[in-house]
Length: 234
Image (cartoon, rainbow, N blue to C red; front, side, top):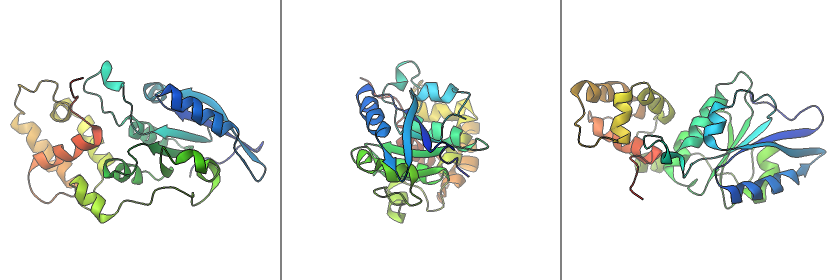
């Protein structure tokens, strides 16, 4: 169960955001949010990589997480741009996780909606252009107003996965094998994948995506869309 507001009536908030301008706007708006005697206060602002190495989340009752990190691949071309999902997974694994409010300019796409819907502590997903209008509801409502609905069968079909897909588990499985992750990142595109790597994806990853056709490439295509890999030249 996600952590609730503090005993003082103050909900302590951490913002995970790489964009300085939006972070400032969100912090200002959150610090002015009140509802029924409860007040929100931002206690920390971190980027995605800082969030992934943060050891103490006990001071956070709620965390706003931007889905994508636009500059994460500058130092690591194999890194998934969907860093917000990794942050949410880390928080979801805590014994007492904070309330997670995810947002993105691409929130309406299946690449964002499907994975976030799999994490029980993600209380709501918002289009970043709409989030500021619903902060109180996002922080405290059982059914947050303005949040995007769960993904539809069409979303799964558009993403290229089945309706019972577990995208977060598939990505975790890929991360467990550097040779498998390289199929997504393609940092060495001149190298052909080894048969054992293709078999791993086909036998262990593809079923997690509920893809019936025994073609490992279908799993790679779907996960590349989610992670926005491989890195595109700039």
